[in-house]
Image (cartoon, rainbow, N blue to C red; front, side, top):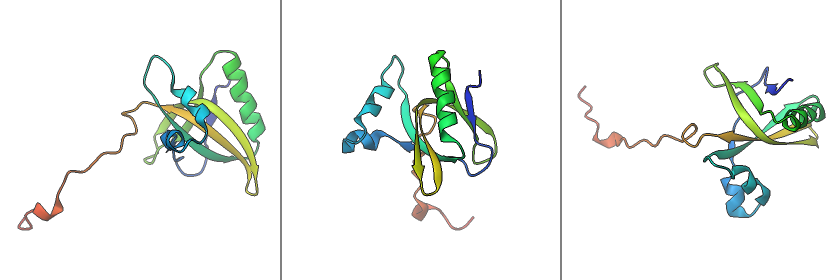
Length: 126
């Protein structure tokens, strides 16, 4: 069974947190994606594709066989990454087929690093 969707060209996908959906009251069904024995963050990404329906069907078949579906992509430095897909939807737009994927992330995996550096205090006499 083919349980991967692979991005073969284009930029690294951007993952948008669905936390704003909870706050704004939009797409409340995404709250169910985070339920379970472990804490995960859920993010959404949108991809252009030639045949979104076929990719969606591949997701449905994998899930029907109790398999995890993965999104495979290259990160910003070119390394292969895989992330589990928990929901998928296709949308037709003027740009062609769009595949919207909701993925599961470990909370610490994509945390933004906060800089506590005060550049005003740096001694310029190096």
